[in-house]
Image (cartoon, rainbow, N blue to C red; front, side):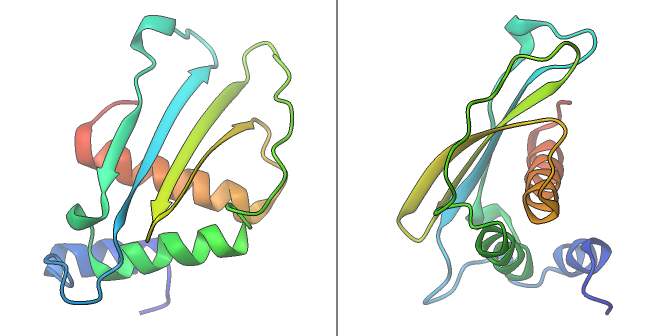
Length: 130
């Protein structure tokens, strides 16, 4: 394993950590996408995936990405309205800590960009959507 996203998906498919055990990380990840080309406001629904639906490696990766991006400690910036740019509202609840953060394209912080990408992929896998 090289520690990449494909390794997390392989672990999920192999059933690694599908059932949370004693001391398992609890929480959920949420995302809502607004704006962008051909945006339809009525179709912008929040997508949520509970940690219980994730493999343990996926939960650990989300927590690690949240730490690297300083998700729970960073200062929220005003999100300017830009034509054709997407605005992501990313929410995480991890072991009792919870926060929703609005992030606009382009996402300049690589750690935050990776976190947004992973949350979108996991939520999309869980329930479909854009």
